[in-house]
Amino acid sequence: MKHLLKLGDLTSEQIIDILNLADQLKDENKKGIVHHHLKGKTLGMIFTKASTRTRVSFEVGMYQLGGNALFLSGNDLQIGRGEPIEDTARVLSRFLDGIMIRTFKQDDVEKLAEYGSIPIINGLTDYCHPCQVLADLQTIREYKGKLEGLKLAFIGDGNNMANSLIVGCIKVGMSVSIACPVGYEPDAEIVKWGMEQGKLTITNNPKEAIVGADIVYTDVWASMGQEGEAQIRMKAFNGFQVNAELMALANKGAMVQHCLPAHRGEEITAEVLEAHANEIFEEAENRLHAQKAVMVKLLK
Ligand code: CP
Ligand code: NVA
Figure 1 (cartoon, helix red, strand yellow):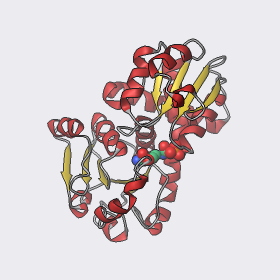
Figure 2 (cartoon, protein in one colour):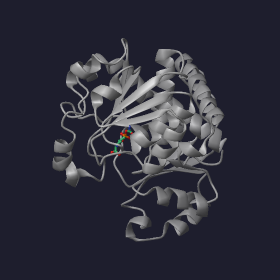
Figure 3 (cartoon, helix red, strand yellow):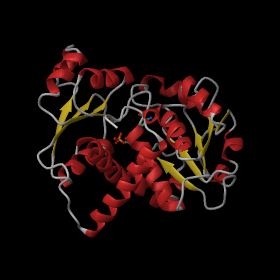
Figure 4 (cartoon, protein in one colour):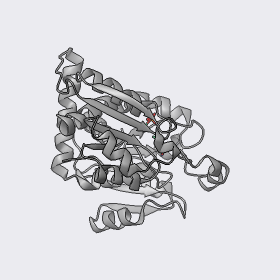
C-alpha cells in the first residue's frame, strides 16, 4: 500500500489490517503506552475546505507518533494562485514524508500521487472520504463485535460518504442499502460495482432501506461546496430524515453513525442524535486511532 486515495484501491485484507492496527493503537493510547513510530517525519496537511475532526486527528496523531504535522491552507499556498498540482507535488515531496489533502476534485489527489514521490492520503474529496469510513468500520466492529454479515442503511445524499461506505462496507463483508431522492444517487461506477457484488440496494424509500439495518448512517444534505444548493436540497430531501419513527423500523439495538458535522432537525433529529451520542462521538474519536494506523502503514 503506497497511498490512500480511495478505498477501492485497497484489498479487504489491507482494510482489516488497518482496523487491527487502529484497535491496537487505541488500546495503547488508553494505557498511556507511547511508540514514536514516526519520529523525525513530517506530514503536510493541505486543506482547501474546512475541517475540525480531520485536521485535529491527523495533527494530534502525528504528534503522538513522534512526528510533526504542517497545516497548509489552500488559500496561502501558491496552489491558490494557480501553481499546478504537478509542480506542488514534486516540490513538497522533497520536504515532506507524506501529504494528507482535503480538496474538491478527486483528480487533484490522484495527480498529487502521480507526480509526487511520497505517500498521499485523501482527507476528503467530493468523490470520497476513505479515512472517515476506516474510523466508522472500527467503531462498528467495536460495538457489534464483527463486521461480516451486518447491514448498513445510509439515508440521504449519495455523496462522498455514501460512495466510501458502499466500497468499505462491502469489502469487509457487509451489505449496504442506500435511500436517496431521485437524482441524488451515489457514483454510478460504484453503484455498478456494489450491485455486481450482490451486496447493494438503492431505493427512494427510506422505510424500505432501513428494514433489517444493524447500522443507520446519515450525513448532511448539502456538502462543502454545495452551500448554494441548500434550499433546493432541503426540499428534495424532505422525508429523508433519520428520526424516531424511521429508527423504529431498523433492527432492535441498531446503532447510528454520522461522520459529523450534523445538522439537527435536517438529516437527523436532535432526539436520535443524542440517544446515540456515545456511538457517534466514539466514531469521531476513532478518527484519531484510524488515522494513526494509516500513517504508520504508509509513512513508517
Ligand atoms: N467528519 C469529518 O471529516 O469532519 P471534519 O470535516 O471536521 O474534518
Ligand atoms: N459530505 C460531507 C462530509 C463532511 C465530513 C461534506 O463533504 O461536506
